[in-house]
Length: 334
Image (cartoon, rainbow, N blue to C red; front, side, top):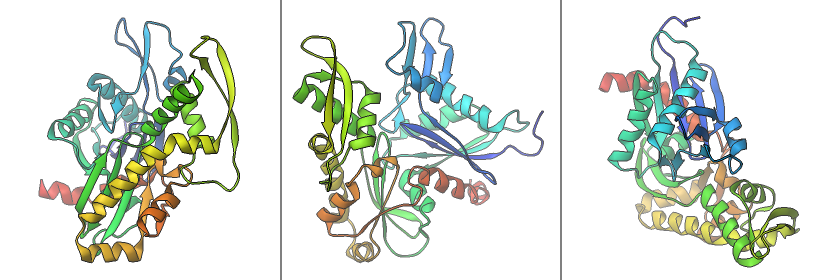
């Protein structure tokens, strides 16, 4: 069945780890890992999203399960386009008119990277593509009134990038984007396991460790978890018990890089806005900010109250969706 009327308006949080889609009038309709499994021999897409994620690190030679976005930007254009097409088709079904799509991007991307996102979405079936910066979308999604003449600081920690911005009067005053986020936390755990325990673990195991016992601030009670991997000396399977205090050793370095980036943004912020931020606090959004103790660490190092937004993972997608309501204003401008 064709859906009559004009194409839908879709907001997409094209994340390094997860793609979330918001449809005007319906809310969030899709939340899938940004992973694609491709047959190397003929280039056919075999699986997208959850099904493809199950294949990560477990595929035969002719099948490659990849994440086509790295550090918040497109690293494999063809696969990203196929992934977007699959998700757009799933959200829209058969449509008579192509949808208008708003996609959020990290705040410091280059013109080439911006164009790659627009081209990929257009090729995937969008009638018109709009871009919104992640911190702005995150602020809108967190329920902050960004139009007021007062400073709000948003720290959006995703899978590939951490975007930090001071927002006032509907625009970004000072911003910074660093390629330290959820993925770098996973990599830090993999490195720690190699260096300290001579053990090789995969990305998925590292993520499980991060989610279950990872922390960057001392816990009242140490939590434990059994980890299976390959012994680098004997080459055989090995199981060891990890504690959250070990995870803190592994994760503190990337966490401090985020804290230092927040500090440097505050140093560049006009004094009037800094006083607003110290009154209102810092808002944290994105899945990466759920790492245990990250808010406490940031609060201790900056001396400013830190709040985690209500629906952290969906914040950017919700903000992108709310920005869709102003598409007609944008259309009028363009």
